[in-house]
Length: 142
Length: 142
Length: 142
Length: 142
Image (cartoon, rainbow over all chains, first blue to last red; front, side, top):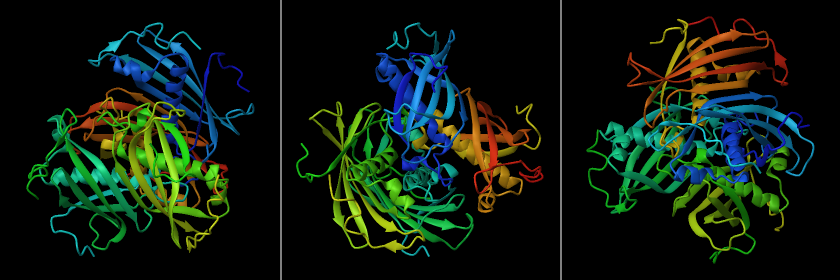
């Protein structure tokens, strides 16, 4: 079901909000962007890193590329599972990958792919300068 | 049609975005909040005040109360006219009032009421302290 | 701490998303509107009513009034607790009330008030006609 | 300045809303998605096609891929210019391309690139079935 995903991929669940639907009767495609961001925050937390603390320390991750392929529509009130993992670590940026599924509940084993996505992130210092990505930026794994 | 509104009320137009609709087929009620905020910015600009410059100078307006009465639904792609005016100036806050209409075009005389709203705003200094509202905060009128 | 709230008030928790902040460094005041809506959905679910099923059966709740008083700012990544209860049942509408708090975790006893809100809701049939509110619209309590 | 763009690219302007900023002090990366959608609607309108009417006739365009590369940050109250054009017409989908610029005003000749984007769109019938893209889907040009 989740074949091909790294073993240490993070898992996060959320429900589609009514405000996130559009008049086509499904979640608007822009709604996925905050979902992915929330999944990234939780993936970091699970690895022992708080993005809030990172920002307090003067480091900011900025999205330089966003790529989403939509397979199936998400609907109001459905439970969405998002699996997150590090795809590629470049010298001055890092690409995280995400797979979004519809599930019956957070405990359900069965899942249906809704979308695949990547975000390429750059690390900025307090003055907005581009920093090299340290090896332990996202902690040492769960 | 606009009886009862002050003569110096500001006028702003915008179109309902697709992303602002929900699965009921109308603009979601949360969409009105950024519309009202946009109308306020443009009302200030028309009076010679830039909210962006105000913030650069260390002054921030923060919403302490929001009240919206919804009369009719707004729909995708409709042109919305928002009339904005100062309702009450208190010592430490100011209440702006808004009336939202559906119109055929920005030039149309005929208009249909969609909603009425008020926002009560407080003025904050750079350190977050509450400031007294100066008489000329919003300029001297159009 | 929660003195004055009805005993059967519902409780829901969520975290402030990064996308919900603004350049003042706090959650934008429009972000509270989908939070309140999510709290209402969960309050109904806890009482045995699914809003999704209600819509599938041709009934829709539409917000005719929204009123929010903001006390303190919510910040990124904070856990927000929302208590929801039925305030007034009118003949053709119902007013739900909400109190929003900042808490350290969903289990925390200590809580700090962020905002108070009410939404007045009307019940619409499939043809958009206004329906009388049935006594058991929101189930029989937890 | 706009070298490389097709001559019949559409042009649309909007201003960054306060609600679209985040605590990094710039427009949140999710804000670009509704902007691009608004630009597409206006590009169609300029070519004599109303997306609202298209939907009323039972045809819907659904985004199957979204790809955005962010070059520079957009800031509150800045005027954004979006150039839109048809990039590739496939048999069962069409890819539109967008370039986003910061400009001093809608009339300004000088412009600074903020982002580049593509959306791949599929055409759905009333029953959700995939339709072949007709040659004149987007009208015959300006």
